[in-house]
Amino acid sequence: MQNFSSWTESQLDSQLTHLNDRGEAKMVDVAEKVVTKRTAVAEGRVRMSASTLEAILAGNAPKGDVLGVARIAGIMAAKQTANLIPLCHPLPLSQVAVELIPDRDLPGISIRSTVTIEAKTGVEMEALTAVSIAALTLYDMAKALEKSMQIENIRLVSKTGGKSDFQVKGKE
Image (cartoon, rainbow, N blue to C red):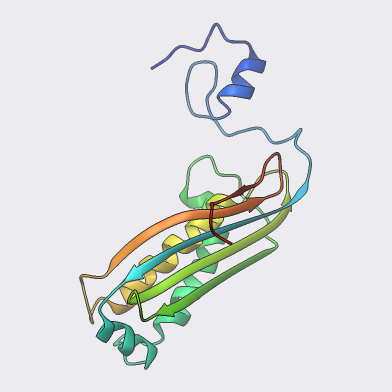
């Protein structure tokens, strides 16, 4: 483990926001940050056979409403991110939207989450958690139809607010 004891507190705060002077993980102090509106968008997808996709869309999955349950699971997961990922701040989210979009060309389901807050820290992890848990729930709800489904390409698409904005090139 690297020793950061010779660094000033200012150097540590600006360079290694998640490490203390002993190189140990710590929660970032956001007390001095400004409250701004922050939005994060994440996406992912679950690839499956065309027959599995058609069964899901027809409502013929053994466990019931696959897309509805996965959407609710994603929303609930975003609200629990701080309980799942160490050092994430518990946040009073303003809005969480999870869309599950059938894609016959894939074939599969594309998942997109948008999370919004007015706070001192961003919601990227909440958006990514929503997509991840929606994908895992979709898999769980449909695994009786197909165990070879693939969860793919979970990533942050964009974030606004705070010190910097981010957007994947060629998206949005």
